[in-house]
Each structure stands twice: as C-alpha cells, then as structure tokens.
Length: 63
Image (tube, rainbow, N blue to C red):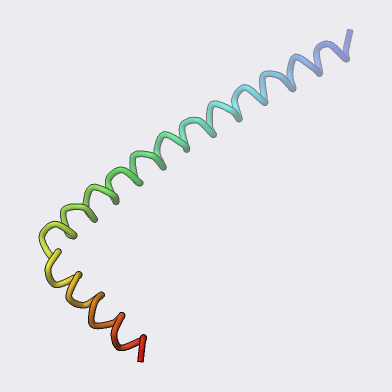
C-alpha cells in the first residue's frame, strides 16, 4: 500500500511542477510579446536610419 501512496505523492508533485512550468512559460511568452512589440515600434520609428546604417555596414564589410 505504501508504494501506491508514494506513487500518488509523486504524481501530485509532478503535477505541481508541471503547473509551475506552465506559469513560467506563460510569463515568458508575455515578456517576449512585450519585447517584440517594443522592437517593432522602435524599428518603424527609426526604419530609415537603420536601413542606411545596415547598407553602410554592408559596403564597409564587403571591401
């Protein structure tokens, strides 16, 4: 009977751990979404400067 209790306890611990991992995953997805959103805003605002800098760097490195 002890083995069943131990297995049940292990199952509960694994379920709790899975719940924590799911919560962490949700939190990371929120942070990634916020970062992506901020970068898109930055890129749209500074698009011309970024493209010019990338073009200059490309030609500089090509030499």
